[in-house]
Structures are given as C-alpha cells and as structure tokens.
Length: 191
Image (tube, rainbow, N blue to C red; front, side, top):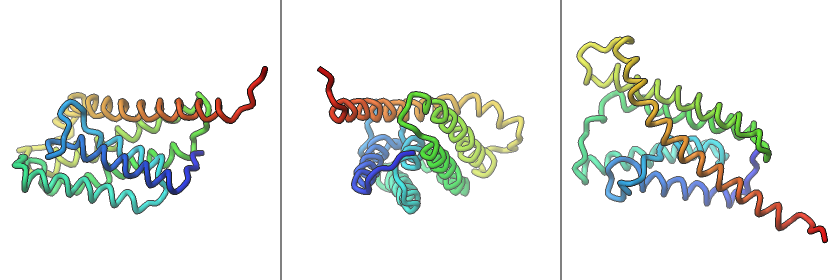
C-alpha cells in the first residue's frame, strides 16, 4: 500500500496539476509535442493523493482550462455540449481505479499486474463514459446507436489508452528508480 507523507502528496498534486496545464488540449500553455495527460492525471491522483476533494479540484482545473481555451484562446467549443457532464464519471472511474490500485500496491515487481489491470479497466470505463457520453448525448450525431458507437471504441480508445499508459509507465519507472535509490542508501553495505 502506498503511504506518502502529506507534504509529498501536496507536491505530487501540484506536479500533476502542472502536467495537466501543460498538456490539456490546445490551451495557452500547451506543449504540442506531448499527448494529453488528463486521463493519467486523474488516475495518478487516485493512486498518490489521499484527500477525495482533490478529485473535485482537478476536475475544476480541467473545466477552467477548457473554458479558458474556448473563451480566450479561440479553441472550438465542439465538445461543450450537455455530454460534458459525462466527464465527471469518466474521470471518476480513473480516480477510483487509481484508488483501488493504491490499496493493491506493494513495493515489489509483481505489483505491475494489478497496476496494468487497474489502468486497463479504468481506461475502458472512462472511455465508455466520455466517448459514449459524447456520442449519445452531445447532439452531434444524427441517429446514435450502439452499433454506430462500437467502431468509435476501436478508433479512439487505443490512443487514449496509450497516452494513459505512457504517463503511468513513466511514473512507475520514476517510482521504481526512487525506491531503488532509497533502498541503496538505507541498506547496510557489506564489505
């Protein structure tokens, strides 16, 4: 189980918020070469940050970035429909998948299995809410059907899943290297 000090959690939360600000869509601070980290931010916040209110804070940040991009940066408002509300359970599913993984985590290599499981399930449920919500409730589709939605899963989910996996993989690698360094400095040296 991950037990991080509150100060560490605050630093991680600030880092995750900065990552979202730098990579979310076409905003004023975007780094165009980096894929969106929004899904990973919600998943990793679920893993690393205990207070539940941080989910609401990160969602408010995402919403503010989107509103700012549309209102000030001239980004299209195509995604601002009644379906935007589906992002709450979408991001919530990533948050809860991260929370579940945090309870399964052990500082051992086998922890990669529950990590991969939680990332996969979280991504799948998130896409059903976000992509499905947009497809069925945005008003952008003339006659939305389940059969019409299925090809969209194959088209869009792999990209979102790969972005999420990239950021979670980098975070896991950083955590693993930090753990090795910490163990190397605290274990007694043998002559």
